Amino acid sequence: MAVTAVAIGLGVALTACGSRVDSGAAAAGPSCVDTSGSEIKIGFLNSRSGTMAISENTVYDSLKMAADKINASGGVLGKQLSVVAEDGASEPTIFAEKAEKLIRSDCVAAVFGGWTSSSRKAMLPVFEGNNALLFYPVQYEGLEASKNIFYTGATTNQQIVPALDYLKEKGATSLFLVGSDYVFPQTANKIIKAYAAANGIEIKGEEYAPLGHTAFATIVAKVRDADADAVFNTLNGDSNVAFFKEYRNLGLTADAMPVLSVSIAEEEVGGIGVDNIVGQPVAWNYYQTIETPVNTAFVQDFKTTYGANRVTSDPMEAAYTSLFLWKGMVEKAGSFDVPAVQAAAGGVSFDAPEGTVTVNGDNHHIAKTALIGKIGPDGLIYTDWTSGTPIEPDPYLTTYPWASGLSG
Image (cartoon, rainbow, N blue to C red; front, side, top):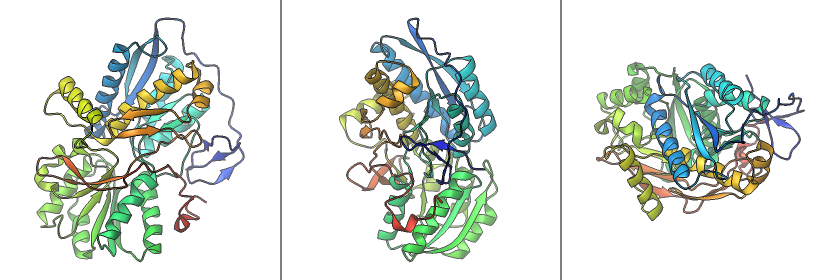
């Protein structure tokens, strides 16, 4: 079911698949955000339980660290941040319910969180209906833009398209697609198939498994028998643990048939087991191993706060960055008022661990540098390819002729 998303400055709504329709959304009720005291409430909404907890708990940790740092430096417009945290429990309907609670009952000024596209799409009408703000930190399938969501993870042309370009440069002429059975993998694979058709790449198979699925013997056997040059993996959560264990059990290796993943970061590597995934490529915009003074300090701060054995990753870095971007928007606007923050968003920048990021005021995404990495024997990810400079967000792939019709 398509979810409408209001586009900035267009006076129309955009459905989740990108088509334009007349906007008929009801006006939001009055905000209950209280700015009279010395504190301002914000909401954290992450899966602290369920199949996505393997990924989302670290996002919560990074958000808390960002809030503590902002409070230690004087807060936002002189107000300390008071965090109201909720568990989305890996269920889209619960995300929607908790979002409504945070906005209407807890009266938060903004919400930070979500992971799966199903959770985001479940929350989208809640934020639009209440004219509230969600800062969403995870790469996703694109074909969406909302005035009520700021997307601080990668959109398609900043992750999936560079990953495909990388595989093509490495000589891949055939792919097998494996994903979780929900909107992100399904839409991503629609885009991948359009790219493949335009670039002479054969799709040898396409398999989906429910979120949380752990029996991968049949799917991995199909992958082996298809003998593609590479696998494009859009599995999410702890299904990756079972998939890669079975992949190794059947003797498949990164050298013989690499599996390029777009939802496995440093945090997930430990759960999967380094021996099961060493050498495999991943596509993101940030790795713990980035060598810059800003990232070195960020990694050290995270380890000091949560333990020397903890690792940093792309989604948690994007979440950390999102809180500072919101702070910059509020301070530029001189107000916590949502319309004022939306109007001030364009051009707001932050010197993030991934590099300097800047908000696009038209589509509420940010410019990001694409990085393809490989998982090392120490469980960290090392850059193998980079776009070199930040890529401007193009969520509807309007600059790619092969993508015409995908958002229709």
